[in-house]
Image 1 (tube, rainbow, N blue to C red):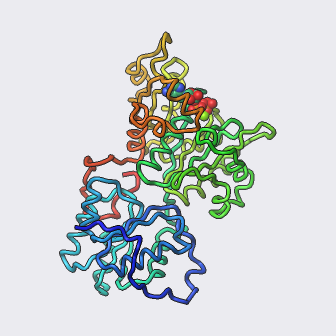
Image 2: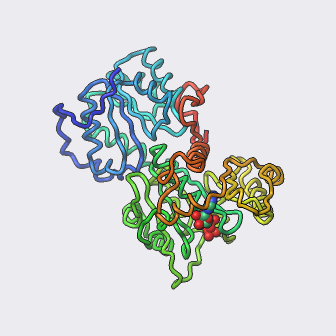
Image 3: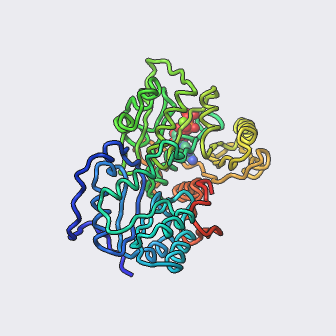
Length: 425
Ligand SMILES: Nc1ncnc2c1ncn2[C@@H]1O[C@H](COP(=O)(O)OP(=O)(O)OP(=O)(O)O)[C@@H](O)[C@H]1O
Ligand SMILES: [Mg+2]
């Protein structure tokens, strides 16, 4: 089966409708990733043109020929994007068998739009019942596609697309920010997901430095007047590091007092989460109503600790608090960092894990050469030395956090179709 990327489409597409009615109220689609698998070049062309529309300009769209079969083949060994569009000419049981095979390889949280050639309400109803998010009948024009995608992501009652991951150090200087930034990098580059790193260490944050970017007011402006923040203002406040990674940066100045309000934090983070699939929250090591609330409200928590007594006591306290405050969530991920400082007496990782009741998801050696050079250059570890143990560790942890296996080992779902699965898997 050919896997033909369709960026140079020659096919004459149907004209865009002149009726501006529905488009006037359509919100821009957030920074999601969309893969389309078509059977007809005309469908591919219509989708390609939809992707060029202003309302889809933040999304990353790729269009392939090959239909459902190619999608199933491809996702055996790679993670699924936020949205898959598949065109099929199949009917009846063959159609549902194809979609069943696709559901088997779909990660939790992925939405599916089916493009078919049957204008039959019973087929439509059955697909929606089985968990397909939308069924469109070919031939399509770009506006129909834009409307369908916009409906899926523009519903104010729909849960936000973004997963938030809060990073907290067990004590100051454990390397929590370093871990946060590297994980953000790995998710954006290795998993092709758009990421915003939100630096909530307003006076001292290092996200800008670590990515070699000029300091920006960013998050401070948003937190002082959260009611003004919307997706347009958010775009202006973000600093773009790569095509998929942006920083919501801290000003890192001391001429102002930064007293943060839990509600302001919550509303700002909600808006960030509405616009991007992955939000990294870099928390400073302070204990205040807002840090507690932001940590407890996050989808995933990563605690970074060093192998010493103060870290052990604080990690234990944090884990106990998190277990109590979030009895139905996954336990936090523990990163043991800076392990093996020469001549320093350390608590063995095994004893540390036993005492806090949590196995570390990742143990990183003390490597001042690598980490120091990365920090001074404003680079991530993977950019500096992709083969290092630390880079491998960050890639591994990013997969653990996202609940995705890298390749091959993808767990097959026992569900027959899409909607029964939740984002948290
Ligand atoms: N595994 C490691 N080996 C050597 N140095 C490291 C390692 N991890 C982090 N560092 C270094 O430790 C220093 C502190 O890191 P970082 O700022 O990420 O910690 P933090 O926990 O966020 O600190 P803060 O409490 O100030 O927020 C940085 O200079 C970083 O380069
Ligand atoms: Mg920090």
